[in-house]
Length: 389
Image (tube, rainbow, N blue to C red; front, side):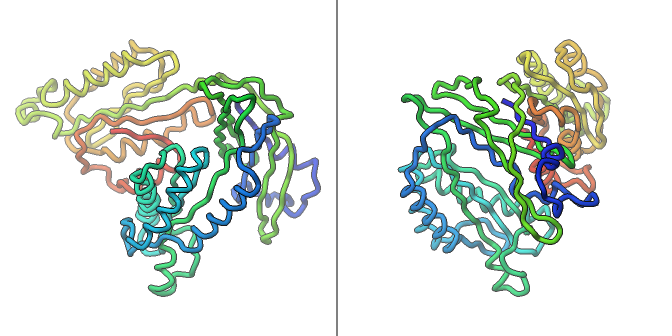
């Protein structure tokens, strides 16, 4: 189920001039975008008393907090007690989910701190998993140094920013006639005055529920204007049914740098040597296994990037591209090839396509110039694109 919500159309129905005057309304200031409530006349699986107790436990989690040493993501022993209590709660409430957000102080680059904050959230997740919690219950993210709780003016204040915070996600859809439904919601800002989102609802056997109507969904926007005043706009989204099965757009990056060839090959320009034939056979195997839901693009790289074939479903074109311009390319711009693959705008406006990058490489890197691993992490998070090597 695909939802599109045009805020510019809805704003005209409400009197919120403080948020939209003289072109100063910016959806980038939305702090809580669209809250989707799949009503479906379902009963909540948690009683009010259970919700209250969870809320109190969340408050205690964020009061005690979990802190880290400078530049580190290793958990301190004093964190184990509160995490053990959290483990017991998650294991006794298997439908409950928790969002873990990592933070850092202000020392270091944005890219470094973003990666470090993700690693801190992942350290907590790994501890919970080691205690038997389900990975389906745990969501992690990093905010870097963007949300400090102090002004970072001294060592003590900076230490308070090196933390993780927690938020419980309560199940909104539970039992209907002894059958369990699951809902997933994904939202993003698609333009200055439009948000798009997806609702995917499945029953306990994994089959999609396709009888949802506009009356089953409600939404609101919450934002702050330039004066700091909070505004809320309620409305109903417009539902557009789409194929439940998403398509996948793969970008395959192939490494033709010197380390992939035998030494004799580099001296005598023998192309089919070293790791090259293994890589090309692996790519051809991947292409032959593609189904009708998949697109593919092929990039070859060494010290420079070369797009061999843009996105297509045509396996014949892709197989031909595997052997095109397969020349020795000296250095290794691995990070830059992944960066360019992620930032390709093809399919960005199509919510039914998932973009993924697969890098076929021996892992070396020496030619990406200003693009480093932190740059790759940052752009991967920004575009929500999976990368595999």
